[in-house]
Image (cartoon, rainbow, N blue to C red; front, side, top):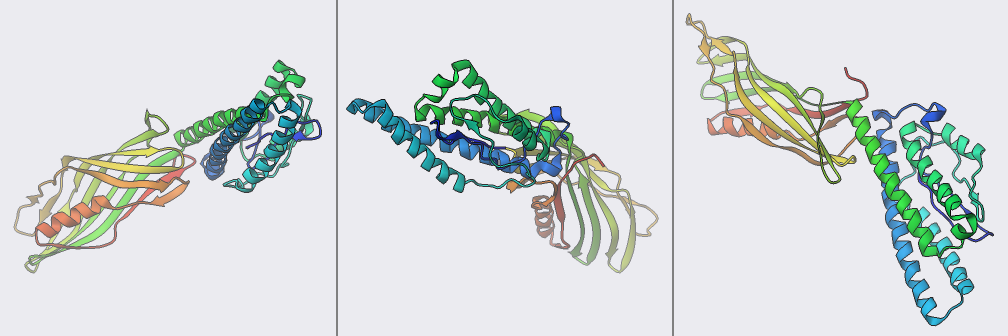
Length: 358
């Protein structure tokens, strides 16, 4: 939920322009899950936008206020100009709001009349009932609670008699905290979801009188938070890759195989809550693949070299399966080409985010 002050004069009201769901866990609202990821991301981006917009408005008003004070302009004239400027700016800000957040069904405005420090509990309750999940509501309700608490601490007269630049600066600070809380909720949602990288590839190598069909697959296992940085965090998962020889023909002879070439894999996902990047590292472990072409003895297959690389960068983060790049397959294709072999077959790689572990 995002909200902001409209103006401070008694003839106007402090309005909450709600563009997202808002609810309270205390009212029994359900916790957010990855099903609500899109709504959380939209609300988060709106809060970031409003923080910047109100910081800009505060700076502009501060410039006008200092200019007029230096000229000896009366406080009432400064306030009249600031009130109208604030009101007009709010219209522009609301019109340019990035998102109308999916799932919200509550009221769009909850007034706090100028000169008071109260909001209608029935309207706040209606906001709670219109929520999609509690983790979106709590940052919004905290935002409004802090407005009321500051008003009560200062006293309504002092609170509402501040310069417009001060009101806008307070609003920007509220959105800064709201955005941070929403981002923390996105992280929590990912932590309780099943996030994993999956891939598979049925491919055929032909050349030098041979035809080999392989089935390559991997699963990172559930990824979990491993590192947090400034504005981002990383999730890591560990799993194995398996490359199984399905069939082989060479010099008119058909061969059978057993076992597979295996590698350990480590996947690192970096995300800011809105987009993600992926790094994949494979470490050579060997495996137990053997090929028997009917000569009375099975031939062990040597393992390949370990590899690493970037699979994705700047890809939108969303629930479900997101198709990503196949750099790992490109490396295999390049190695085969160096050996005079051609590779056919379409690899498939996806980042999977599900709300419950399978």
